[in-house]
Length: 349
Ligand code: ZN
Ligand code: ZN
Image 1 (cartoon, rainbow, N blue to C red):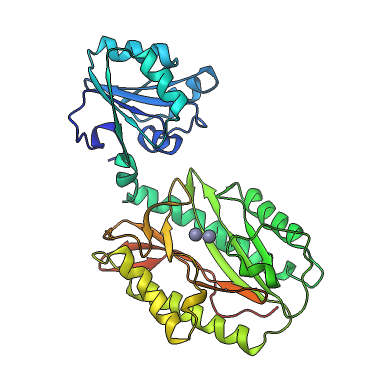
Image 2: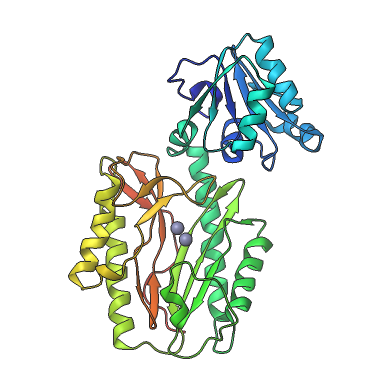
């Protein structure tokens, strides 16, 4: 796994071009910040990048990969040297303008679009990848513990988000994504943009954040309360927690993504809250914060061992509040293992 030869060659093409930055990192082990292309033909694999990256890349790429300084003309020459006539390219990673430039540069060669070939491999994590994801989540758990005493009446969403992100970066990690911090009524938008809103007693605080370590992401959401909770908040929190824990207990290999999503939806229905669960249950996490598989009503995909997915049921009541509890689990040995260590019981600060 983790090399170009393991990418399915369904069209029997005699060459492949990998342009997606995340797929390049997955296949060669080095992140060129989006300025690298992997090409392979005739048993040879080359990473073409520029002088900003070639030196470090040569030290860090997987053994089978050769690093060269170059762009489109050099890529075209590589395929000519290897006599390639049909080359597959990643349709979702190449813009229309890039496709036109590629076609002009490699004239006389048939370009065949492919979708999701590397992403399919990435959905099943190796033990090395799993340990990187688990380490990223450990940082996220530690940040949550540190941030709780700072959640006080009077703080703004901007300030709390900045403190969260400072804590992640101080531990040597990157941000897996821009953190979501939403107070009170702002929480009813699942992906609310942070604002100057000031925390007051009776508000729920939703924090969705994650660290990225050694190229791998973590993702967690916790909802806590400031001062006190009313009955509606308390019972909705209990329902979301039930849905979360039920999914963590039941998700396993062999289940479809739709079945996983239904577990949460049906549990929230018992509480009359399924109509307020306005997004899907979860998504894969790895090099990208959102990647295959997607736990949704629209997916018949079957979960397999080694998938890392989030379990993030939520309810969103417009003009009132929002609650989401998100853990990250790995599908393993007939069950799933929760990689998230942070407490899920309702915390009132
Ligand atoms: Zn999240
Ligand atoms: Zn998520």
